Amino acid sequence: MHHKNILLISNGSRYLERMRELKHALDVSILPTTSDTFSQAVSSGHDFDLVILDMQGLGKETLASVDSYVSDNGFIPTLVIQEESALSSLHLPAQGRNDFILSSAGEAEFEVRCALLLWPGEESAPSDIVTVDNMTINLATYQVYIDEQPVDLTLMEYSLLSFLATHPSRAYSRETLLHRVWGFEYCGGTRTVDVHIRRVRSKVGPQIASHIVTVRGVGYLFKL
Image (tube, one colour):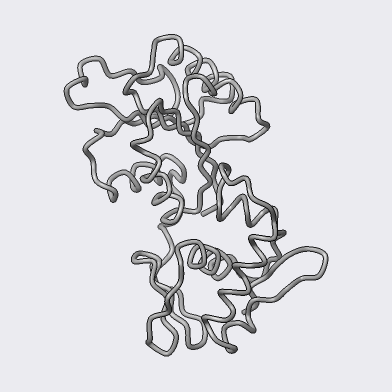
């Protein structure tokens, strides 16, 4: 499975938390936008692999703009979020590989539908358990254990550690880590990465900390 970029178009905030959950469940980055900022998002220079449309409050003009963007860029797969009461007016792009989901659907169904559109026919998702020396990471529950004892990590510390551990033997710049771990919406500086690396190293202990290698002039690498 390869990293993918998702464009969320929603005039509300109800799916922002769901997007954060999705980002940690799948290897994706998510750029949230609204009807007002859609044109800026699609001209940002990012290539998107999936468009998620939250239909609540979206007007016909926005839908027409999305249809044009999707078709002009090789019919990007689209997932439409629709209220059950509005199914009779369901709008799906006429061409391409698309799907819809009810707004009341659970997290697991949402994740699966996104994964099927992002990685059609590819291998199954990796195991939820990652083991390195005396460390175990449970990707399903966001938990880390050292010698079978839980490690108290913040969400971003966990996200950084799990990203590096699941993408070993490759150096990532601080800018790339900000993009891949914190996401498009993060506006802070690269020093944030250094601070979180230092905290992770101190919490996981010397054995696992030795796997997190500083690559001078580049960034960080998880060495197996």
